[in-house]
Each structure stands twice: as structure tokens, then as C-alpha cells.
Image (tube, rainbow, N blue to C red; front, top):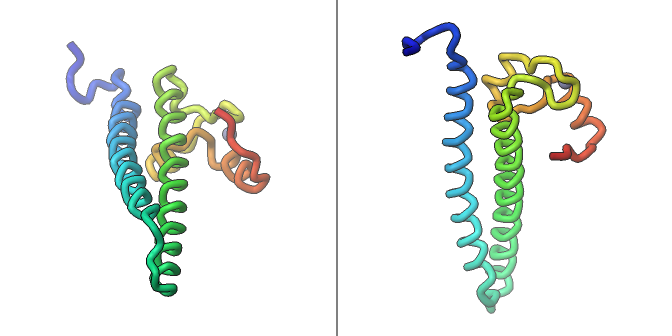
Length: 128
Ligand SMILES: [Zn+2]
């Protein structure tokens, strides 16, 4: 029976997993709300021209919110998948341990800071 705080127990990884699951649930709720709002946005455009402009602007905002929430969800799924195979703390690119500070700041991180920088510089889409 492991005691709480047992050093053999990977509580870091557990806490991170719980946090990711919680964030995932929040994102899914947020996405559902965004999609419901978008659906309202698809009702016929306002007759008044300036109202139309406002409606389109709202749609664009919702679009970008939806995209960023979807992107975050993908990242979380990848991190959870790696944690489940015991590689949550290893960089998916170079295999070196991901910096602890980076994991605490960004629980969905699957690359070390160096590889993440390279990836964002080259704009190569991260594959699953
Ligand atoms: Zn790396």
C-alpha cells in the first residue's frame, strides 16, 4: 500500500494527467459553446449593413477561438497519449527529457524547449 508522498509514486505525472483531463473537458465545453454560437451566426444576415459587418466580425472571432481550442485539444490528446505509454516527460522529437519548468508552464508540451522552438521557426506542422 503506497503512502501518500511515496517517492516511488510518479505523482508529477499523475497531477499533470489530471490537469490535462480537466483542461480537455473545459476545452470540449468551450468548443461546444463556440459551435452553438456559430450556428446562431449562420442565421440570415441582418438587413442593416453595419449589423452584417458586426455579425461577420463575430464569426471571425468565433472561428479563431474554435481553431485555437481545437489546436489545444490536439496537443492535450498527444500529451495524454505519451503519458499513457510512459513517455510524457520525453521530447517527441529528440527523446531528451522535457524541461520540468516547461512542463509546469505548459502541461500539454510534448517537445523540449529547443525542439519546440525549431518547430515553430520552421512552421512544420507537428504530426501525430
Ligand atoms: Zn527535443
